[in-house]
Image (cartoon, rainbow, N blue to C red; front, top):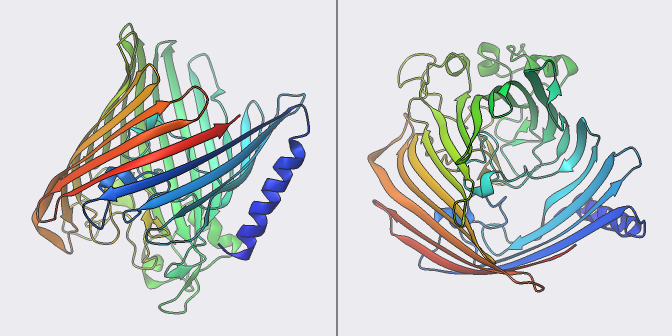
Length: 441
């Protein structure tokens, strides 16, 4: 961890400790210790994927500790500050900042400064937390965002939600100091209290920074930001690729959802459709994306959530033509790709740079039996490499995980984590872990 990060951690911790003396402040602290035994140098896929990098493929033991404080003002506004430190003995064995943020919230919108992980949805069963480009697979990176806290009502049936953010990728990468622009707009149509349709567009763009390969600086003027905002071509200072296409590395998705309530429970049907250029935004890469069905059943013994997702990233607008071979999460200029600390930021099935064409069927179930929480995932995956360097033959296999947690009345929770991967052309992977977590509220 660099000096700025260390000082920021101590500042947040000190600020929380001072606020703790106020009656309106709520303070939480938690810590987790995990140890693994595996039959290979790498853990099974679902034991480390989507863990915000607290655990990586080569982890034997890991620990993290967090502190959070929330202050409520008289006008129902809140100020939240938090920090999480993490360590594991895996690929990058050092103490790191996981989260470090301050968030100011009103009943309508919030502003967050720092690094804060996306909230976990659907009991963590999804392959990508319902966001193709921004799963919980990588450590959160620092920035500033403003977003709506609840839908803004336009009429009896219509409402919208929005987000605008700027981030900095401060890890070790080929283009140092890369920036990320993000915006989201979602339109909701409420048929009645039990049925809702929504469509959202998410847009991410990597821009700026200095290439360690060429020594060239990418444009960072205010006029360049506006070009990034509207996906306009770069001028003569940009790379030749960005002069022919849009300035920067653009990633986006259309997100469609239909949520409805029945006597059996709450259902959600959704589709994340990715695009990285005009062919993708024109749906020439159909049926690529995530197709999901989620059920939160009512009055079904023990079962709290059931999820099925079909993931397809093989089309990529085809193998031929100027607009084909989208090669998701890769880029000619930003060659570290859509990664942070070497971990894919989006759906973890895509591994930059060598495996972007994937077909997967994924099932997840979450259950609660008295003091036990039980989460399981099973994925059938076909890894096809890229159009440029295909896997021959296609790598096929299963990723499995079972997490059983016992929540004690007073002494925290104890979890047994097990995983097994059976993959063609690769040695089978299995692992078992023991995890202890304790929280003070």
